[in-house]
Length: 327
Image (cartoon, rainbow, N blue to C red; front, side):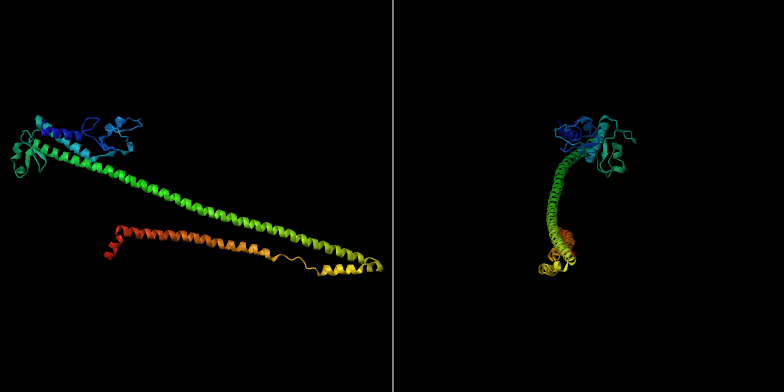
């Protein structure tokens, strides 16, 4: 096999679909780097296939990752056109329309084929004119080099896609982790509020029960005094209705009881109990301020954090130094 045949075979292999063994038509590239005609790969997988693999390396593939390869399609189209031109020249099919001779020459400047008589014409005398075979070999070599370069670019793009996808995935995981931390911290705040709410509710309930108990005791004492006074009034009224001798009987003890009832100190309302109400009123007046301080601390802290991140980004990227230099 000649060197030209070997190169041609290599080029043919680079632009030929593995499935249909023809030049690529609408080629797509899989994650593994292999390319196939779009219709060929879909036909190979079938409409109901769930396990999709590369026909060449058997690597699992996602159908949504079929990337159109326009550059490879253009190379395949150009090589196919060159092969057609070479075939036409080799078989004598291509004929010069002006001189009706075989179009065996190619102008590298105008990119047209023509016969030898046209090559001697004024239009191409100063141009680079070569044979069709030589031009085809030249472009074939160029295309082979270009295909190799594109293959390397393709590998780099595939590698970059994986790296970028990993970066995005890391970012998403970091955001998710921070969200979990935020929810946990707010849960602690919520738990603290619930605990304090329950604590103060218990205190208020205890104070309320104590007030109710002391109210019962106070009212019982007042009721007892009321009963004694009523009994004394009844006794005095009864004495007033008796005979003089009976009125004076045991007058000493009667007078003593009257003086005792008149001089007794009445049970007053306990002033210390109002302190519980005042304490609760002060606490309720204090709560809105605490809530507002918490809200303001969150907002101002967030703004300060954003400002720190802004300047930190400028310093890390060097934009701060450049802005000072430009200013």
